[in-house]
Image (cartoon, rainbow, N blue to C red; front, side, top):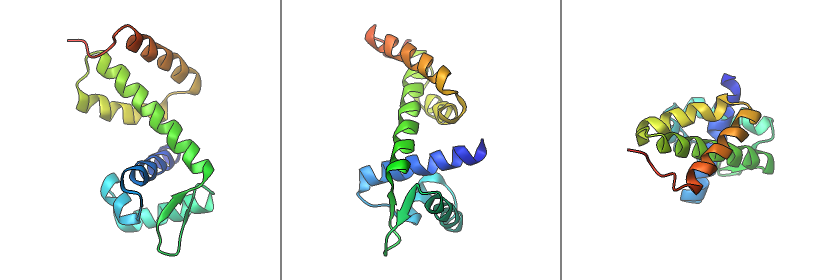
Length: 130
């Protein structure tokens, strides 16, 4: 579980940094995830070996199609859980922290059910409940 979570966190972070900054280097990832640069280097090497990303000549990280697919799915799960928790009255900070944990822990079957519930809540004017 921990390895899957780490992989998903790295890929999601790289995806978001690429989207927001247009480039991603190890130092950016280290800062975003709150880990050391050597830890990032080891993780990037492993993710590259697994085929989820590649590093160019300047050591900039680029997601492969497989890496991007996982990153987008992880981000979608995160956003769904965050919206659902906030619609239930959970404050934004707590909802974000819990959504980050939940995005890795819930089975695909349970996620689909929760996603449907979140969609229902949004259709009914879901927003935050007081």
